[in-house]
Length: 414
Image (cartoon, rainbow, N blue to C red; front, top):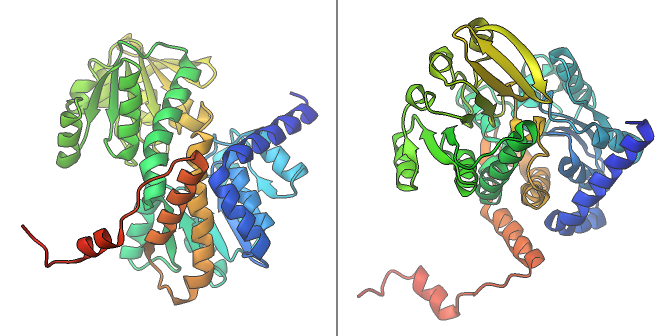
């Protein structure tokens, strides 16, 4: 695609997303008017596509100097990255298909800004600050973290006393995980799988590793499309939930024998291993919706294969030594972004509204917060929920004064 066409495509995608991100739009209007980020420097490592561009531009328009890169080597929309640089004047260091070196070079270019705040997804930017870029730590007032995997890393850092500034757990906000993790991941994962394979979902054995909010969303969508869904879990409570939700539950070593599709969404490594690959039937499709590319063991795939080749865009065929073939999507990386379009615009509208509000909250509160991982305040969740209902044209009931008094009282009983 010619550069001018790519630029036009990127601009169109950003403007389309902006039009449909009405909650963030309302927040942006106020923030721009008040210039709430005037004079600040903000470094961002998020999946660099249209919805992220709308958030980054909102922060820039509200007065901040912003630099952006991707949080995954395969999740950049090159048209959006080009448009941000050329049309909107927002420094962006990202491209689809980066090498590991290019990926970390981009993270370092963002940190070269010497940011006051960072917005991260997966905690690679924050980790880099605490290891190879420690000279910048004194300047950083705080951070937001977008996803489950990043929060897991950051809570471990905080527990070990290694975290040096406060971090807002955007991922754990109700208006993020109830919708982004469930409805966003569910729809976008199916989009990535169907776009890359063009295979039927209905009637297939669909195995999902992990029944957290992401796994639930994928299971919901797969079931809705007619698949026979099996859940693999290590958490007994979530396993019971999956069973009572109507899904088969079994270990991966058993589920792999019957699977047409296996999707991992756990945030842990080595979810699909050599033992599982050995028993898979011919033609099984492997995909990952967790943040890092270590949930499906690529090392095992390579050691057990006679050869492998690319058979479709984002589809690698591995011919195993036992004669069977299995297919890995998007190099084992986030299938919803590496092979699809990512979460729906209206879903990310809520998540990124939380991001913008948490950045504002940090600017007012970071000086009194100790280095730790903090939940998003309830009033910010409630504000985003009310704005979302408003943009949807939905009205709800309100408690009367008598009802408010009743629910606060302990004196009334039977």
